[in-house]
Amino acid sequence: MIPILNRAVVLGTARSGQAAAALLERNGVDVVMAGRELGNDADLSLLDEADVLIKSPGVPRDNPLVAAARVPIWSEVELGYRLLPNPILGVTGTNGKTTTTEWLGAMFHAAGRPAAVAGNVGHALSAVQAPPDAWVVCELSSFQLEDVHEFRPRDAVLVNLEPDHLDRHGSFEAYREAKLRIFENQTEEDTAVVPVGFGPIPGAARRVEFSADDEVPAEPGLPGRHNRENAAAATAAARAAGLQDEAIAEALRSFPGVVHRLELVAEIDRVRFVNDSKATNTAAARRALAAFDVPLHVILGGSRKGESFDELAGDLFGRGDAYLIGETADEIAGALDRADVRYERCGDLPTAVAAAAAAASPGEIVLLSPACASYDQFEDFEHRGEEFRRLVQNLSG
Image (cartoon, rainbow, N blue to C red; front, side, top):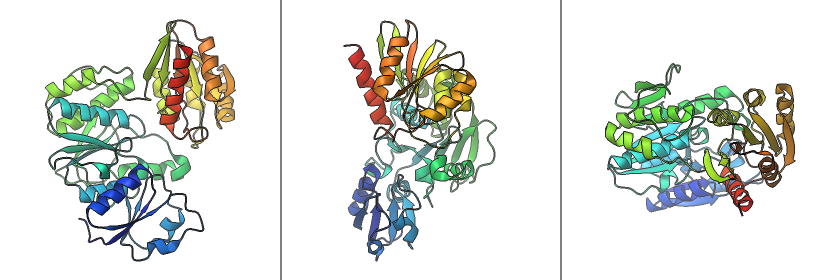
């Protein structure tokens, strides 16, 4: 339940912070905004008389205001959950959560059921303004889930769980714990959708398992075994929400996918250029490699997240060449040397696109699937993907 709030500090002034502030103000709460960049000289008096601190997902827990707070600390999704009347279908996981979330939104729309899509990508949960009976399909990151308290989705989906964001969480165990908080407040009236064979989860929800080998109402239109896994997860969650197989089948066939995720940007002289900028970890990049059965020219590299590149390098052996960019280039080069994979050090994305395009033959693919975050050279993965698209369009004249 929502306590009586008179004053709230919102830490982080980007999309989710602005949405949180607007929702609080609509509910008569006095709001103080603070930038996430506050350092050791932060004005701790901002917390005076505050009833709650709303922390944007990009703000780490060692931020001075967070460390000094003696009031409850909520994520923006906790706030949205407490103030919005809508039933929530939450989706988390390491990879595939955006695709699964958007696919579920398409299933609701195919069924003629009111629904909104929100969360980690797109609209913040607090920004949703929909009829009370409209479901909200909400993509949830580990950063958002680490500060929930009463958040209870009617249905909750874990697509998969693999090491990621170790630079922020410190260990896979801490990352796993944050992800599984999606289930912790669920009751016997709720549904938890998890991969087949996944271990114990918190909460008391009815458990439904899925796998890429499940029978689904229609074969999905997106390529790759990982997308069949996403389709199976979405189907299980949609059925739990009461959607009929006819609508699920329509969405499985017609859903076009999401931008920056195995997105075909162009085909030039029978060479396909595929934007997978959302592959910000090695597991996502490995899924991208597995989605194709033709020679690849893969652009890899970016900012560090604490992962090993050895398994990715092994998957690339015999599949094609790599073109390295960003601050992780040396680490990736070492893994590629050990796996005997050819590569070229390019430094930046324009050089890599030009080199890969020059080397690719008809029938082959130039694939941006960096396996790294983007913050060394770009604002975010969207910025990186848009730059890739621009560079490819320039190639085509």
